[in-house]
Image 1 (cartoon, one colour):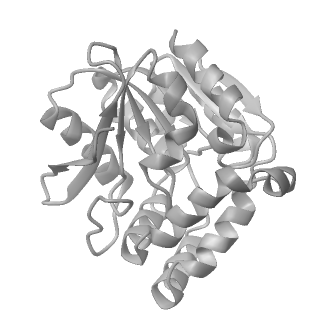
Image 2 (tube, one colour):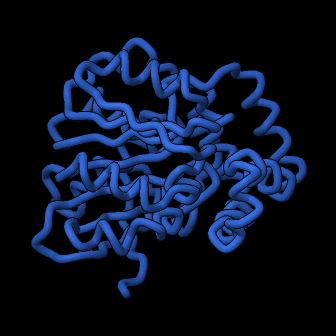
Length: 262
């Protein structure tokens, strides 16, 4: 198993990344949600590394990547992807992002379509208002750390049915949330707070798969449907899951992406 390696961005922030899968296979890049790291994709790795050279990274402020002070922006998170690809000398990729990762994916589809072959946007949205809610969350994490947010997130991210049977899959996600640095979490909350791609997302002109969770309280089905309407020719797959659909429905999620990219 390859350890995490690091690439330094233009502003000095170090981003952690790793490759898995055959060296000559097409590159599939994965982008994590708010409060997790690249290991959130563990349920799909065995399947996807059969067909792809999988490139994972920890979003700025998460996992082993640096967590600079201050507010981040979706623009900055998107440029982290482009700069990482440049460092690794990778031209084009397939990209799959969930939640915050899907917001990064939308930015890439709008601003850097020449670097993408196909795009998967899972459990995500073009706008996550109101800003006051994000300010309150930033204040909470600054005052009390990650513990209250970690517990609340795990509760919202999985259906009650899965919470009853899926603790083995849920426990690592809870641990990732607990280990996320408050400064990095707050920085990414600010990026989501300030993001509004509802109009510009219609500029995406790439084969796009939208994956939604039928019971997702964070980015509910109308958000997935709005994305599908906005992006011409995109496909929508709804899974019987809450927010972390790839963890709750690992086989169905893996198959949907594999089929789309085949």
